[in-house]
Amino acid sequence: MNDLINYFEGSDAEDIENALCEAEEVAINQENDDPADIVGSFAELIPGLTGSRTQGNTFAIHYHGRTKEVALEHSPADEDAVRRSIRDVLTPDYEVRVLRSCLGTDTLAFVVDTPVVWHQVDTQFPEIARELFTPFADEIGFGSAP
Image 1 (cartoon, rainbow, N blue to C red):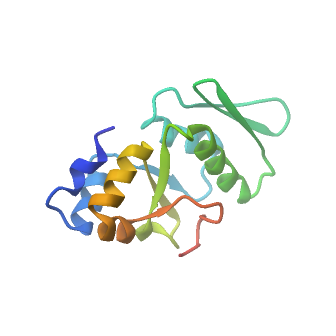
Image 2: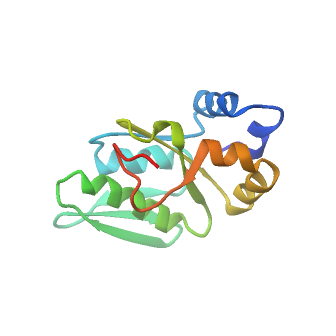
């Protein structure tokens, strides 16, 4: 994962978003993704993040000794539950934000970096940060818009 702050130097919001996507610095989730695919998209950015099916209808997400189990209901709510659990196991090491431009579509793009880097972005480029990103909140899902 490159240092997120480098994308902001001398760029506007559209250029930053394009550069992030081209550099594969985002975790992309499609509507109806399997839990393993959702975890896999984040694991490409975060070494040590793994997921596995457990007994019954549960899926476990692991990161550096932290585990969060998700009870799967075989409904669209599973996707949000898996993403929330990823966010939870990555905290406090990482912060997850959503690219605003993808809200309300069938594809969500998540940018992950350390809280220190996000603080730098928010401090040095507050307007662009607000334009591009929204914090990952429990209600973020497919078809939702801010």
